[in-house]
Image (cartoon, rainbow, N blue to C red; front, side, top):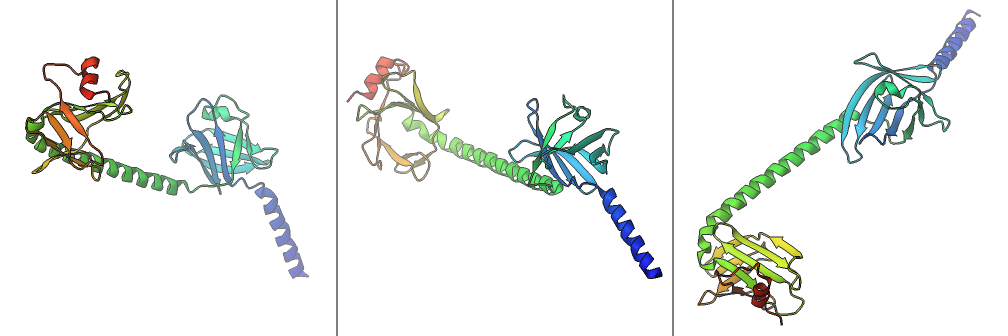
Length: 273
């Protein structure tokens, strides 16, 4: 008989604890305010929670750490670093949360719905570690890019003095009416640059590039591998010809006393086949 009463007491105590436990709010809930750039995420796990900002592009920012308690089927969230208390209750959809006093966290209204996020709760610390790792990788990649650019500029500067025989303003000799008007400048100081324009209307620029170049024993290589091409000068240094292009490509040297911004002269130089 004494054993029976002990079993009843344990059962009653257990049912009492279950009743006190109330609803489990574990999960994640999102709120997007049109006045802010980030979505705010409430991440609840056990007796702890946090609010973090999510920009939707994989970056998050911690905003607050909270202590969780449940009373009268309400979720109470106390700021561990302050005195603010945020109160929420379950929405009629039985998933999302209705905020009862959102003004305490700087939002304009109290009664705001935080939509349920089925992917939660999140391991925020792991998300921050992953974010820091990606930031470091991006920074290293950017540093590598800067170093490569500096090395390439150093190489170009070393090659530039060899451009002397090729110096001048060059105009591509058009072979069809569809060809653009293309001008290439070759100077030791500014190195090699190209501009392409609509032949009929030079106000409309089609493209601009600063190609890679290399001086070899056989001529001037222009362009990035594997699309680099070899160019050689005529005996009078007035024609620049591509030696390995799939179709004929010739450039004529402009008169240094004339300006290629003169549309009539530039079109005349390019030809109108």
